[in-house]
Length: 442
Image (cartoon, one colour):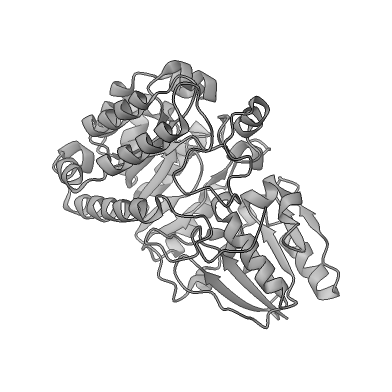
């Protein structure tokens, strides 16, 4: 039997910031050896128009849902069943089942083997639901599935699943309902030793979810001489000793969700750590003193935001010379408390923006209380374009603490910023799924 793995693109075309979709390296070794596997990632290559596969399996994010549904209908017309997994089918399994035969709800490790058994028996079920209690120590990666794919030269690894916080806009808590789970440190060390890449991105939603586990991880990383990037919550930056250990172990950049400069906004979104540790100047100073660069993210559209708020955010990010920053209009993702609240309050412009024919990337998805949807869209667009102007990229490049005054870091800084600048302009205002995605999905 033959399975075609597909990672759909948001716009149906290639992008410059694509990283390996790690899930396929996980499910490949869970697939019986006598099954033939083909894998295509639309972000780096064209998809086949037809296939002789017995099953098409897709991982679907909300921003790629429209494209995934279009592809699913295309392959089903050829008589090929389609199964979908990932965040979007987990949050909206009934919607996804309008376009495919089967969905995986939750994690793949304890569901994919069942899919394989049923596929072999010719009895694919509509729904496979994970227990949510997968033992991470048993996960095996087979990166050969990515052979000859032109991804960014960064290795991906996962230490933990879940987050100790529960922000109302975040899908993570809705997807990983169990407490945070971590891999044993020896397993991570062995995985890193086996990876050829020097630069590693820990895809954990918060590498600092368990402080003791994180400290043990950083100590184990020191002798491996890898360079790495991670996402952390802001509370780690109060611990100067831990920050210096992170730097010693190879940390180059930390991604932190600052989200807002307004405490009332932070309270509304449930960003408790940011409310508690709201001296951002001290937080940023501690990180820079450790020699680590900052990727700051911000969200605009909560009740206390105005168009002026967005200008203040970009001024803040430029003042502190962040290596990278992103300014997002508030995105009510399905399955989150935010989406449910805005639906009840009737503040959504598009209830199902991910498949709505009118929605364009960068549009406001809701009507904020203190500005118009158009002001929200344009202010975020202006912030993105301003921060990523050539002038501001160059000014930030010259800031010694933003890039650690290190030639290696400067090269990484430039590459990341130029890619970010390109992708922001390539995506802004585009129709999800691409303009050839002409099937009526509504």
